[in-house]
Structure formats: structure tokens, C-alpha cells
Image 1: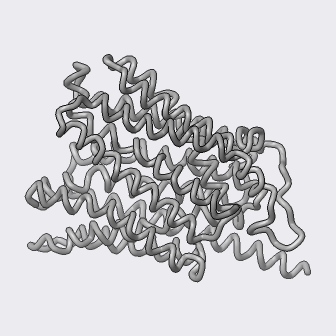
Image 2 (image 1 turned 60 degrees about the vertical axis):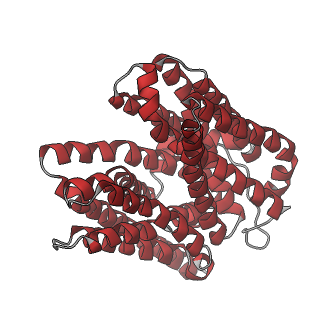
Image 3 (image 1 turned 135 degrees about the vertical axis):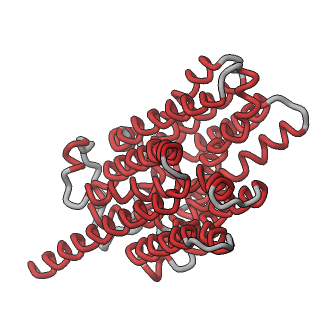
Length: 401
């Protein structure tokens, strides 16, 4: 039963990743067809981001009322409808309208599934889960590229991915009884402990839990590092390091490949090393990658290698922070906390890459690796402070007994 549901979740995360890169791969054609400037892509992504933030913050209430399986099913159905809506959108206004259910669906299912795996499965599965998201994110552009190269319009690409999401929705409908069985079965609980269904935790109460501010800042910093690298790595290599554009694109893509491959590899050691060590190792490795990128050497070899090293360093951080949430803040609080984590993640992803663009325009593209170092260091400091707080809390419990 656990294995069947886990397989369903893996497929769901591949499906989650599929549309994430579609807009970027199709926009060069889309903006011409829609008659809008290139910069309007930012409007669509902002609408999606705000939708994901809103639904992430409501995930605790929704999941406790409906259950993870039903929230996942409804969210994927909303995403499928939005993607098919994209395929019939022949104006920018319609595109923006359909971006609303897309964002709302993506945020709720992301928080719900992450909490579900954190509660019911080992750390290795969290790493592999996010690796499968990378598989989906890499596959989406392949589908769109094949559609465009075959002479079909970009709407066909969205229609195909929407159909895939629709098929997954039907699959999830038939799997709903399995989710309920797993949710009511003992898994990572200690002997005799059961997870009680509590009332939704208000946002302002959840934020005041000891250690939550550290975790939110750490998650914000990590996602700022990742999103800035994804958006600006190739531009930095071309404009500041003088790398040939084709080579820069390849090594920029290597950052994403490093994350995906690193998460598959992390799964084999995550249970043995534990979440705290995985986060520590990941942040330090990402920091080393940023330092390699910044080295003022005549050769670009170290900068190019730094892109791969930074990607490998990023690999375990996101899954490990999520998986550690029930242990850090209590199983009964984890859904509310993970929902806030997702909102903090989307804020870092949405706001920090454009901020670097402003800095690069007004000062220098050479600030790129130093900008990354700030967020890597911020993530390291905040997670270490959270670890220290968690250790003290555990010691106090031991002393009481």
C-alpha cells in the first residue's frame, strides 16, 4: 500500500514539473503570436507566483479539511484545466486569467505532497521525489521543442501537457481510497503515537513557533540562490567571463542537471547522514561553487566547474529542510509550517532574481557569484541556528525525564 501511494506521488511530482519550464521554452514564439513585448512573461510568472503563495498559506486548512489525496486531485485538475486554457488563449489577457488557477493549484499540491512524504516516508524518498520533479521540468521543454520543430503552434504543446495532467487527475480520483489508508496507518510515528487531526493553525501563530523565522529565512535564501542561478548563470558567463554563448548555455544547464543528479545520489545517503548533515553539506558545497565562479582567473574552467558544483550543493537542501519539518516543529504542526515554507520559497524565487537584474544593470554582472555567496551564507547561518535551537529543545526534554 505504501509503495503504491509512493509511486503515485512520484508520478505526481513529474507531472508538477512538466509545466514549470513550458513558458520559458515557448515564450519566444508566444509573445510574437500574442503581440506583446518579451518582458510581459514576467507578468504571467508573477500572477502564477502570487497564486502559489496564497494557496500554500491555505494548504494547512485545505489538507486538514479534505485530506492530502483530495487536495492533490483537485489541484492537479486545476492545473490541467489551466494548461488546456493556455492552449486556447489567443490573447494575453486570457493567458493571465488562466494563470490564476494554474498558480493556485500548484501551490496547494506542492505543500500537501511535501508534508505527506515528510510524515510517512524516509528521507531518501524526499530526495528522489524532488529529483523526479527535475525530470518533469526537463521534459516539458523537450515536448514543447518537439512540437515547435514539427511545425505545430505553441498551443499544441500546452494542450499535450494539459492532457497528461488530465489523465493524472483521473488516475488520482481512483487512488483516493489508498491515500486515506496510508494517512491512518502508523509510519514514522513512534510506538503508540498517532497523528491527531488538529484544527488549522493560524498563520501568525505558526510564524511565532520557536525556530520558524530561522527556517523561513533559510528557505528564502536557498530559493533565491537557486532561482538566480537558473536565470542569470548563462548571461554572467557570456557578458562577464566572455564564454561563447553555446558553451555558456550548456554549462548553465549543468546547474539544473547537477541538482537533479545530486538529488538522485542524495537519496542513497540521506537516511544514513540525516537531514541536518545533508543541509550543512549542501550549503557549504553551494558556497564553494559560488567561490569557484568568482575566482578572478584568466581561464574560465573554474567558473564553469563552479556551476556544476553549485548545482550539486543545492541538491539536498530543499528536500532535507522539508523532511526535517515534522521533527523540528511537531507532526501536528508540519502542514501549516510547510505551507509557510512554500510561500517563503516562492517569495525568494519571485523577488530575488529580478533584484539581481537591477543590480547587474546599474553596477556590474560581476556581482553574480557574490550575490550567490550572500544567500548561501544566509542559508547556512539560519539552518545552523535552527539546529542549535532543536538540539537545546531535545536536551531539555531529556533532562526532564
